[in-house]
Structure formats: structure tokens, C-alpha cells
Image 1 (cartoon, helix red, strand yellow):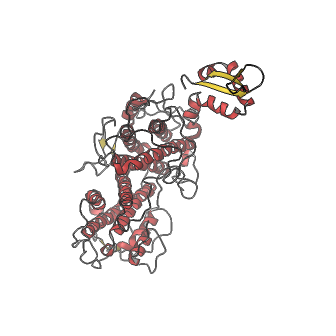
Image 2: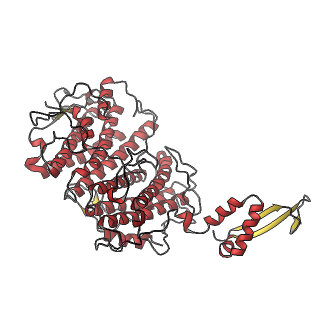
Length: 270
Length: 313
């Protein structure tokens, strides 16, 4: 990712990458009154997410899709003509638009993918019905997008998609074995993978075109052979582990607690 | 290596020498490489001569490269001799249990995909179609030892030409890595379904006049999109979620590859229905207002029938 001269934006992107947090703002989403600090790494769904078993995993997915859908909505306002997002935190205020032409690649593809993310959110919300987390209190978001430059907006959307790819993968072990929800979760995950690659190509093209602020780094569209995996673990077929010494050209996973720690600062109560 | 004749000029050893125009003595030996493969006596003579010339290693490499499957498909032939478990949802696939049946199904497709990518890359870079994948996997944005030798064709925009060839190189190595990863993980249980020859036929062979990179990638794309649908249609049979997670990490990259190739070819990055070359009968996990909300899937039996018919050689 390129350097940014906007310190606030740097802080937020660092948060998304899991850098050390300052005073923790508890991600209240208007939920349980005694919010616990984020669990230390059990790999399971953070206890802040309501429900148990598969329902809790789906609520976790809904939290992420709701966040992502609103990120897309705010991104379009910022890149386009501006306006007020009903799910933006009051700290965001009315978003001033950068008035990027809608034919520009970043605007065009963010606009193309926005309804898909909204559809994912709506599907999960409808599927969960009364057990859906956002029926308790809708979340509000501040991504800092209102002061971001055009490249920073794309970078944040790209980072969210990339995190989504890994988040779904990391949540699979939290489902029950042969859960009826797994095929649908995987069917959503695949689209996030596509989005990530397309937005990477878009970013690369804008860099090559020399559009201001996009820098010159060309990013691979998919994991390469020899890309590092994470901590080596056993690889017998009885316990095929997703990440060994190298990725073997496979996408990496991210544990739910780590995903949650990265995004929760964006989630506000009002 | 049909019709390859090796002419070796070895410095004078007194016998069988011919004077050259410059008055130097040279020994000329003509070898038909096909004959060398068949004839052990000729092969020994050839190797002896080449070794005397300090070219022993090259001689061995040359003969190995002509011997068929060893370097063309560098993985050992399928093992899995003790695989006695089968499942009617995966006709023709064996394993030790349902999970390894699913992984051998995945292995069937990854082995196929890796080889067709290898062939595609050979065609695109002007190599003989049986050439093994170069052993040096390029890193970053490097093309390694590959260079595009065919025209770009009409589907790839000018500003995407370099990326198009780069992705072909990168994805070829990644598919081989997937194949090798599954092979290593399965160990002696590894037994992908293959034809008797273990070979595959690529739709755009070398020698076809005017083949372009557009043609090559158009023929590669359905492999990736079929792979997406195959994994999604098989994962539900896996009983261990850690193993499933591993399979989905592979599927995730097939989705990336599919979308990337579609972008290069000026196509919608999906998910979308009815892609040419993808087997008919794709199914949806959920009803949706638009086609790009969820990935689609195919039943394993559908994929196995279609893939063997289309690609087994």
C-alpha cells in the first residue's frame, strides 16, 4: 500500500491492518451493555457477536457485510457528488464529493460491486431474521472517508475486500461440520475474491496511467507460488492446515478475532 | 521430439574423421533422437560420445526430455493403491474415506489444469507443447524465462497485453503448486483420475496458424471457472472443517484467476452464468435478484464426465 500524507487515514488503515490500538473504543453496535474486551486468540467468533453456533458465525458475517456495504456507500459518495449516508456516524457529517468521473475505473467498479455487498448484507439479515445482529441496533460507521483522497478511498475498499476474503476463510472452522450454511458462505467468499482481484487490477492500471497519488507499485492479483503462509502446522491429510511455510499459491486465512479487532474501530454507536 | 536429428561434431580422435574446408579434422556423428529412445545400444553409444565431448549431462537431459511423462508432468504417477473407498457422488474417484475422495477429485482437476496451463504457456511462448514447466518459478512481476511469442489477438486491450502474459505465467505456476500441495498432503492416498496416458489435450495446440494470446486465454478461462464450480459443489461433502478450509483457500484463488482473466479478455468478472466451455448444469446456492451475488456450483459427476471428455488425451 502506498504512503499517505493524511495522518488520520494512516491511523485508520493501520487499524485495519491490526496495528496496536490506543485506548480501546469498545465496539458497541448498541448491543450487550457489558461489552467484554476482545477475546485473546481462540480463533472462535468474538463473544461480542450475539448468538451461538452457526447463528453466531452468520451474525459475524453480517457484521462484516453491513460494514462493507456502508463502506461502499460512503466511498461512492466521496468519489462522486457527495451527500449524506444514513448509516454514517454523526462524526462523519455530510460527505463532500471529489466528483470523479463515473467512467473512471475505480468509480465504475466500486459502483458495480456496491449492490453485490448490499445484497450479501440483505441476504444474511433476511436469513437470520429475528436473530440478526443489526435488528438489535443498526450500526453506524466512520471510516474517515470524508477526508480521504481518491487513492486512499480505493485502498480502503481494496483492503476491506481483501480482509473479507481472509475473514470468510478464517471463519470456516467455526461452523458446525457440514453446516448447511457453508456452501452459501463459500459462495459469498468467492465473490469477494473476485472483487479483490479486479480492484487490484484497477489500482494497477491507475498507477500505470500515472493518476496522482496511486504510486507505481504493481500488486499481484492473486497469491503467488512462494508467497509466505503463516505459522507452519501439520499437513497430514487428517488435519490439512490452511497455512504452512509457504502459501502454495493459496489464499491465507484470518482468524475471526483478528478480523474483528481490525474493523471494530470503524463501528460507532451513533 | 519427432524428427529431431542431432549432429555432433567432436574433435578429432583419428577414426571417422572428415577434413573440413579449413583442414581441421572433425568427427561427425548423426543421431536420430527417436531411435535413441528405442535403441539401448544406440543410446549407450550416444551417451559415450557425448560424455567424451564433455556433454554428458546435456545428453541425459535431452533424452529425459524426450521420454514423455517424467519432466512434462514432473509429479510421480498417481499412487493410492490402497484406496478402496468410493462415493456415488464422485464416480470413478477413490480414496480412504469421503474426505480423501473429495481431495482426489480436486487433485483430478488440479493436475488437469496445471498441465493445460503448461501447454498454454508453451504455445504462448513459442515452446514445443510437450516442454516441461520451467523449473525456476518467477517471483513478483517477473516473467522468469518466458516471453510472449504469439500475437495478442483482438480481445486484449493494448494496456493489458503485458498483464495478460504475466498472469498466464503466474497462474501456470500456481496451479502446479496447487497440484503439488494436494499431492503432498494426500501422500500415498493421492490418486487423481486420469486417462490411460495421463495426458491432456489443449484446445489451441501449437502449429495452429495465427493462434493468439486471446485465443489461448479464452481456452484457459473455462478451466478456472469450472474449478470454481467444482470446489463449491464438492466442499459440502467434506466432514472436517479444517480440511474444508484448506480446499476453500484453493477455490478462492480460482475465483481470482477467473475474474482476472475475464478482465483481461474484456468480459464481466462474474460470477456469471453460462460461460462457454464450462459444463452445462450449473446450480445456484441461493435464489438471487442478480447473477453476481453468489458463486455457482456444479455436481462432481457433471464435472468429471465433462472434463474427461473434453480434456483427457
